[in-house]
Image (spheres, rainbow, N blue to C red):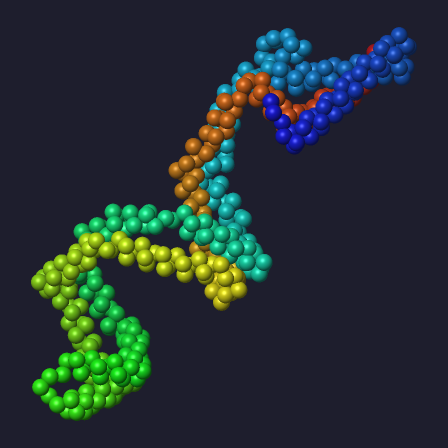
Length: 415
């Protein structure tokens, strides 16, 4: 049996205790022999009887302890060497005991409730060093996951799984309902404002480009100076119109756009012809040969952004993330409702694991012991509990001596 450093230390302590127990037996034997021919009517009788009873107690307990692990003196006495002979039965009993008394839903829930995991976790996360450690480990795991995701895998999942599923599923009604909710909640206002600001900024910075576009579409038969005046007027009108729409949240154009989007949302939910055209456009987009390359390109951009954010440990993102972890810890310490939810979730998860996989977990005990050789199992178990069992031999020697003293005293009294 191979031994670790800890096992070697246990073996030394076991041998030391065996030596102590054996020394007491030898001492009792020496005293017994030394006082055997002395006058037993006085104190030596008590000493001899005590030594004799101590030897009996020591031998009896030596036999009992030794019989657990091997045949005493190598003699195959019935009902000895219990562990090597009954190894498999012992493994099954240990498994049953462990499953019945430890891996039960009631025990698990009680222990989790008593442990108050949520408050312990909250106190741990609240510390800045611990929050930084959580973030560091999270970043390390995220980097490892990003490194393992290959472009070919992203393409395969998108082209073979996600896109075909989206193509099969009708999404026009869902898109219409989503669009309607966005317009009703005015969640699109920020996007519209952004578009208008960018259009106004482009018009302001690129008047020549705007006029050039209109000049290209002006009638060739019209005089150049006429076209120039018309294009210039159109430019300033466009710039003024975009400014008005940008600055007035209730502008008629904005309301017209909202009405148009709401009408489109309604048609997507109720008009079959609109739904059919929308689904046809969706299918055409999803089945385009370049979709796979586009998905991979988007993934590369996202991954590059994530890697840059993860590498910059001094960024505002890291600071906010660390603060968020500490805030979570603070909430776990002070918010009783959150504590109850976390403890209930952990308790439910642990109970489910125990209920579903408890037998498999407990079977690890029996499978491990059953793989051991009988002698190997005996040595392993003795290595862990044998030292404590030597106290039985020591106590047997002491108790035997005291019992001999009492017996001899009673004998003297009744004689």
